[in-house]
Length: 251
Image (cartoon, rainbow, N blue to C red; front, side, top):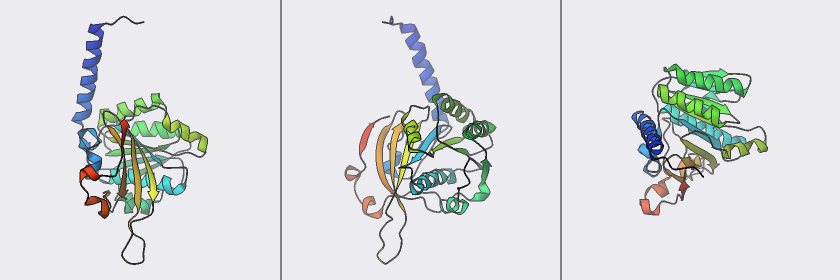
């Protein structure tokens, strides 16, 4: 059994306070959806930090929803965005529909995930980018710490989109990382219309990990042309007490 050391505990507490103060100084990017923002420390997605997003399953539809969720976040920032990937399946017009015009995006297509992580980190350290997105299957604690430190240093927003070629690789998403939040996005049937047609897409957005915050589920309308999410009309009229999203656990 280790012997308590008050002096060492005090130093550790002070280090945590300094680190927390530095993160807060970068500010936060609100979703402008009160039900979501009040679950996040700082009232929004922390800037200068690493966040993870994955689709609700291995299906292409859910994977696309995760990518558009990330695109909508980046669309609401000012400045260029670096997007690092290995697959040639990113559909630029779809990003534009989520508010992220392709003219703002620098695409870095590389041969393997090791290079994706290297470009991801280098982009975060560059200092001239609003945000960096990297598509990876695996993300170790070591790599996530390097990305988190790089994001903290430049203030850029970092999003790791977790994608898998095999179902067995999905288990890695449950492993601990240094990311500040972790999200899972699942496509739902679109909003109903009073006339025949296809309404605005809907997602089940799960905040499955939030450092110093709550975890919860939200049913939301997908990003519009400005990257904004919205509550479905039938839910927006309800009081906060009647909000159907479930509060689940501390991250």
